[in-house]
Image: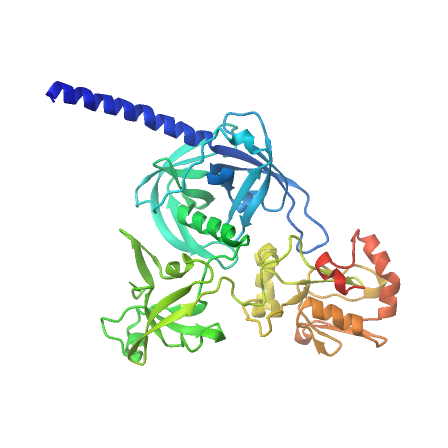
Amino acid sequence: MSVYSRNCLATALLAALLLVCPARADEVRRSVVKIFSSKSPPNMFRPWEITPPSEVTGSGVIIEGGRILTNAHVVSYAQQIYVQPYESSDKLDAAVEFLSQQCDLATLRVDDPDEIEDRKPVPLARELPQLKTEVNVLGYPVGGDTLSVTEGVVSRIEWAPYNFDTHALRIQVDAAINAGNSGGPGIVNDSITGIVFSRFREGESIGYLIPAEVIRHFLEDWTSDGKYDGFPKIDVSGATLENPSMRKYLKLGKEHTGIVIHRVNRPEISELVKPWDVIMACDGVDIDNLGMVPIAEGIRVNQGYLISRKAPGSSVKLSILRDGRTLEVEVPTITRRNTLVQKMTTDRPTYFVYGGLVFSPVTSEMVLSTPSGLFGALGARGRLLTRRIAEYREQPDDEIVVVCSPILPHKLTKGYGITPLSVVTHVNDQPVRNLRQMIRLIKANTDQFIIFRFEDEQEEKIVLEPQQVAKYQDRILRNYNIPAPCSPDVGDLWP
């Protein structure tokens, strides 16, 4: 082939590439949608109510299977969801298919799939992006109605906290991200490298993406059995091995690296992992003295990542140094810590109203809804909630029960006043373990009086007469527009 022919062929190939790349980029843009969501989250402190609807907008992207991927915080507790495709005036009815507030991801389905069948799904990236990789962030930030495209670079990849005791990888990008960008894709090589979910408010042009591998974990978790389990963990507490005195105490040589375990929170693994064990490797990957492991060129993250990326129900192999001996143990993982405070299992809070007192179990959602100043005040006063919030259950149904709302004014409760979120410790002289058991104690009472004790006697006792409560209960409910004395999930216990 002549030089001229070769040059012509190269020119033709270049021209073809220039034609293909813009076409593919245009297909990606056509698959990014604007989301309109009318949200009414529950009121954790007046649990019979929902908050007034608020209108929010976000972004999403069409992926395989006709799903629209977005953030959970865009569509959680939504009463109505509309999806507006790229360069379309139509707002399509849609509904949530899968949702996890833990990792802030959700998928939507439009009511009529034919409306988006001409939009090609955007694939998820198979690998993490390298540092300094250029990223295009697509979405519909506030301030305009048309698609916005901003450019940035990957500046950091780390294993970080999300929501509800969940840790997972996140990608930091130096790109302009604003309200409304949430749920929009970060695109590298025409694939989704991550989904926008937050921004660093104290810095300029710093945002965070949920990586494709976290998205894939979320989708596989849901589609495997129709329910969401979460990210695995082994639930032990440890520390780094930087301190020379600690290393001398453990008789560690320079060749020994890892983390030292201080507490094992799960009795069922107490023979596998013990306090003062040094975990040197996880699934064959060496852990350094800062607890970090390599996951890609130039990227090191906390060793917890190696566990969190596994499928729910799996085990992890640990190399442990114990009393100078090296052991290989296989530890089963869990996806939920067995603490007293758990995530809600229903869409609305559980509650029970009795004589002007509103009782509710403490949930993760309630904790997140509580103003930080109130928590600080409760902690400074040594209240039970702040002391017990991280405690583990002794029985599977143990929980913390509080008075979640100010006492509803009525002559039955005249003169009574207790601090918000006071923990109920006893009904008469019986300890309270959970709300259902407390309702049973109230229902079984045959005495003239019933006595509620709070905060291990730090709060005043409340004495009520069951006959008087029965007489005025319906009036109290009507006065405060409370539809029922209890939430549906405990309705089988009352009256």
